[in-house]
Image: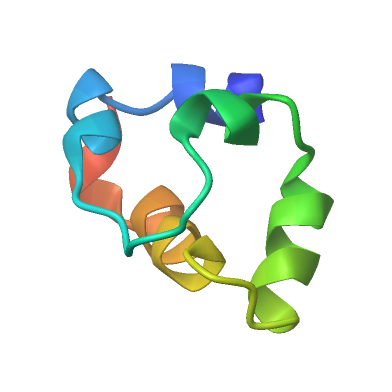
Length: 60
């Protein structure tokens, strides 16, 4: 996930995430597949993170 976040603007980490979501530092330790499967499992905050990570506005 660090590779993906390195390709994004730093402002992505300022986005408001739902209450109870993991932090961006916790997400750094995960793989893209883990984030995707967590979003598919409807775990709190992961759908928002997946949406932010796929948003082209945050691309460098």
